[in-house]
Amino acid sequence: KAGVTQTPRYLIKTRGQQVTLSCSPISGHRSVSWYQQTPGQGLQFLFEYFSETQRNKGNFPGRFSGRQFSNSRSEMNVSTLELGDSALYLCASSQPGQQQISHGYTFGSGTRLTVV
Amino acid sequence: KNEVEQSPQNLTAQEGEFITINCSYSVGISALHWLQQHPGGGIVSLFMLSSGKKKHGRLIATINIQEKHSSLHITASHPRDSAVYICAAIAGGGADGLTFGKGTHLIIQP
Image 1 (spheres, each protein chain N blue to C red):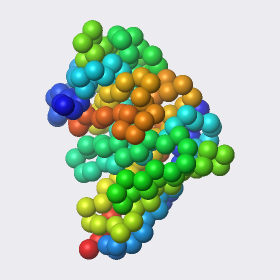
Image 2: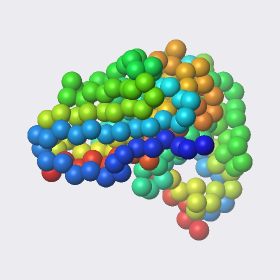
Image 3: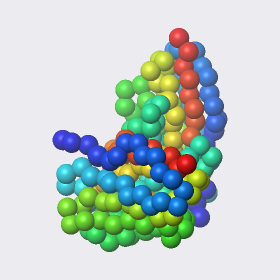
């Protein structure tokens, strides 16, 4: 069973540019959530999608957005990049109703974004 | 807003020692998740708890809902257990994503 796939693994962008990150969930998982990890703030919840609809959103500015496609693959977009957006971006897939079982969330390896 | 506090922030121990990592949260939750993150960033789910205790190999996780506290124990620790351990709380209904602790950086010396 393939795991959660995130692409690209590494990315370097310039301030002001925009970036799109991709996450392919485990087959059969319909929920995808996104997280930002920085040394200062640790892991923070960005948003969660289920059946192409955003179910919940963390406390991030509108420059951070996402979407989910009919095959459950998800993308997140960051516009007008700032130096502080440099971080590891992780996604996790889950199946609603099973999020409370052990291993209910499966994480991807992340995309390391560097903004220069 | 749920606050999740972990302690200790850093822990260095000798191989074979019994390890305890603590996690406290401020509001009621539906479940608590223990994660392990190795250098390079990959995160592995260890346990999801809503009550009581779970055991997997040398790892034991407990949760006390009334006291809003959970612990992760490692018995007979080994250098390969060196990693960052993170607890994450799921609010009621599971629709609010995860709220994470800052993590505990564990180093097991041979």
